[in-house]
Image 1 (spheres, helix red, strand yellow):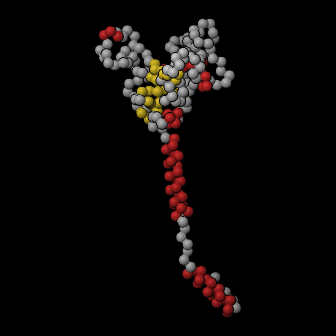
Image 2: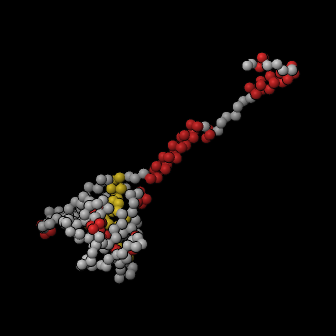
Image 3: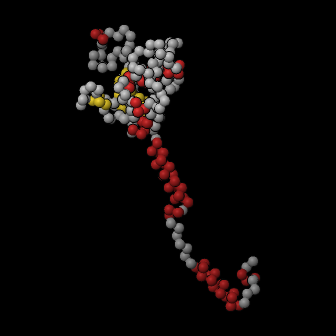
Length: 222
């Protein structure tokens, strides 16, 4: 229905027409840019990108895996005190590896290679899990803070006749710590471990998968 088809008193009809014309002539206020749907979309994408960047995990390869670092904590800088030697400190990790059986150290063809005679380690998690299992990572209570309540730590030293649960002989990936059918585990606490890269060296650090990113270092590229 058009306005001309509606019956009004003459003065009322004129006033209505004038109001409609005035409203049509008004200049609409521009919508702020940040309120426009397109800008909201872009802002959301930028925020998502920032969030994604915060959890992004970079990867780095390590060619020489003969020398593996097993860190005590998710801390790659704080040195550890040397028990019995006040004022002395040591690195926040131990190094571990596997020697080649029968390697002749006296006839080493690469005397400048400090890792000569050692095998490449294909499973750093398993390698450091063994160091935790035998108690090397907690000889003087260095990592008591990582042991959950209720876990009974065995005494340091040989296993003897002490019974150790069968699952203690498996690492977090279900691989046996020691070859053979017998359970040779000692049963010390083994935390969840994650392989990272520090100084172009494999660094196995206690913590979840994102621990490398939290420390600002790359995860090991598999």
